[in-house]
Image 1 (cartoon, rainbow, N blue to C red):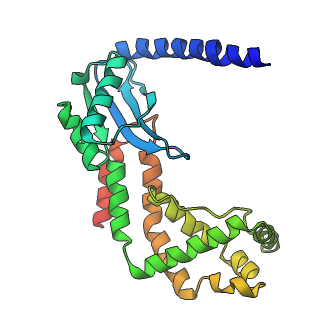
Image 2 (image 1 turned 120 degrees about the vertical axis):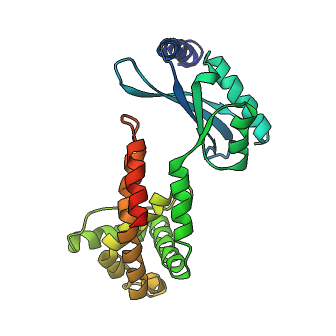
Image 3 (image 1 turned 180 degrees about the vertical axis):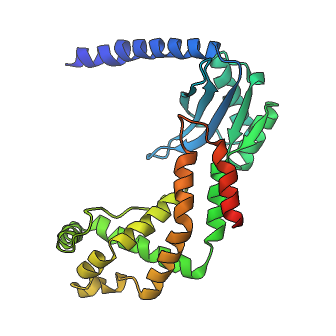
Length: 265
């Protein structure tokens, strides 16, 4: 068994990688211009990585994306180190940096890195949208309602007994058998989905929590529900837009102006 695993890891996977890389290099050699997106992120074990993805249109007008690499990046996340890492990544794939536009978020180091390489840079509209929504929901009442949702998710995530009771209540009330959704701080849409799911399961949650004195304080008040409904109604259309903006098989820039119009109205 060991020899089989060794063959897969030392021979099979490297061969697959080289074959796939050759195919991608052939694709890229026929591309006139391309857009490159890059970001820093951490794994679940907090190991730091930098990724590079290119987006281009083929001769028959098909939009394609290729994640070229996700590389371990233990160096300090200074703009100089990031600039060097990006130059090396582009060079490793024999890409002409002069034929690209680099898209990053608005972190100071990510903004400066393309400038150090003298690359054309555009800001990520999705990230700007995230910042705009985060700024718009900075409100004491919204923070309280969001906190209530987080406590509910935490309780049902850590209690097997509570989850079983919720499933039973969902059946009794003919509600969808959906689990609660956790919020991801870097994705405003996850908060919206968390709120919507709490509203959807409000009756089941109340039924379960009211049966146990120690957790009755977790039941959302009518004021909390009012806030959650208002926020959900307002941000719901933007969540649909964000999903559309995240598409990889079609041009999404045409969605930008309609959403700006939506903001203004």
